[in-house]
Length: 410
Picture 1 (tube, rainbow, N blue to C red):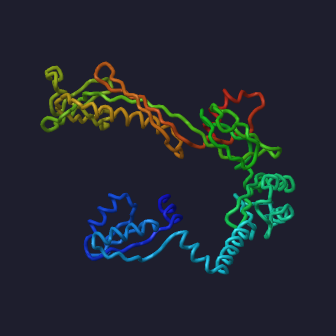
Picture 2: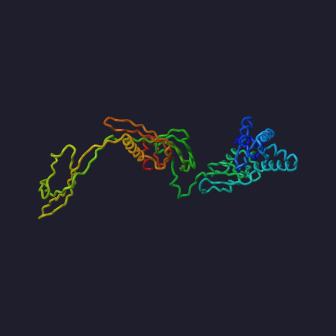
Picture 3: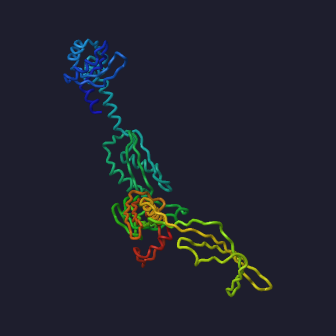
């Protein structure tokens, strides 16, 4: 971009070479260190290039040596524009006056718009526009001559319903962004009553006050239960408090796991069981657990059925027996670490705010005795931590005794 600007300020010419010998022409140009650029073939025998206009005489000599036919197509840049305007002074003066007029008009205010940042209940945007006009923000005013900070302060002072003002310019339109000093209707009162507290330990990054007085600010470290925004005289506070929160999880993944493989078909055994514990075998044999090999086991699933015979209650048991072969499967290090990571991730997910945004992750893996990979997982997230808590007793320690109540509020 800088090269293009410089070439336009210095002036350049667009040349077409034809008739053969273009390659030799370029070689001689490079040998004599003459700058050319944007070299392109327009056709099989026409080569287009751009060059400094002051090198035009040297380029004509090289074209004569190589036998090329060089044609001057265009002259571009500031020197040629000035030469053109020198013979047309009226046009030059008109262009200058147009540019000055355009610059002057761009400094004027053509329109003023009041943009509420929330639903307004008592604040009148027309009143804000009238006060702003009295203070100088109106069509025809010169924006650079306005003290925006002082006007914002005076708008807040003259209109009690305004809690926040931000004035910015977009071209020739001035936008006055306002937020209402919340005086909520009855149907919204319960949603905004009371102070705002921290629902977990965090590092505060942003506090956007809609209604209330900020206690915590950017960069503050807060603990669960700390006061973030105190209410005004009407007993209400409303704000958005975003902060960095750290979650930690732990997981393990073994390098060996037990694999159980069914052997043969399952068998059934039926027997009666009296209330005193006595057993009467009806069908099938009792499993021989003592005769099993070290790598075998029997899975037993029993289903009871109540029988009432002659006033005597019996329990008919249906027992399903399945022989199974037990083996050990070796797990790779990558699989074990992945299993440990998923377990730690699930631990964090159980305590994480669903609206949080993950910013950074740190995983510390360690090999424990017995062939188990363990991971300590840490997530750094950004989320909103402010919650409302109503009817706080005056003699309660806020930092220690709010945990259960805040959890309930969440």
